[in-house]
Image (cartoon, rainbow, N blue to C red; front, side):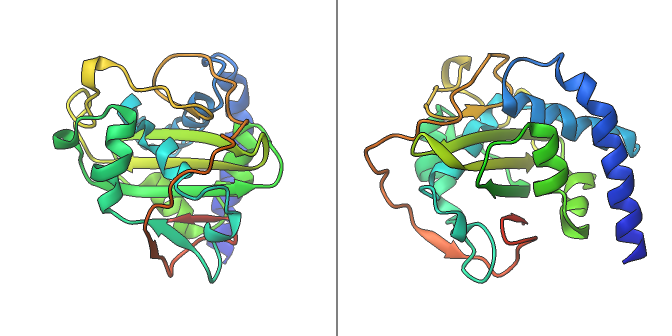
Length: 223
């Protein structure tokens, strides 16, 4: 417990120190979240991860929850079936299915109100030793993040996906550009984005879920 408290204390300092760096990133909360994440990895002697726009799949991952915060953590936690990456997520983002590589870590959080990326990172996604293990895992080589609201507002979902693929060859985009699917913002495209809210009024199709027994907190988990 003492070790975890020390890690979280150091993490808070790292996040606070990195906030000034975040404003230099594009006006996109997903890019800003990746910037905070990489700043903390390098502050702990880890490598900075490649922000792969093909991991815009994170936005489709969020949409699979259809605004249901209760499915993110707790006894009723669920996650999209692994088959959905190839069958639904990749095609929706314009990612070539044959270039998909294993997901080595996931962080997902849900908030009733919108807060800035640095606060989401420290207060929602980084809450215990499991989330820290995912963050500092040395097998990661690339990362992608996404954020989206629901029904024109709350709740707000944040998702980070890690992979061990090779930059510029894994999660390759058809035509070199990710399909823009609003609402929501994803990282790695070097664009400005403020479309995290205004969820579509027509319901999305229900994707199959696989029940997950492991989670971090009520509204954050990592696998």
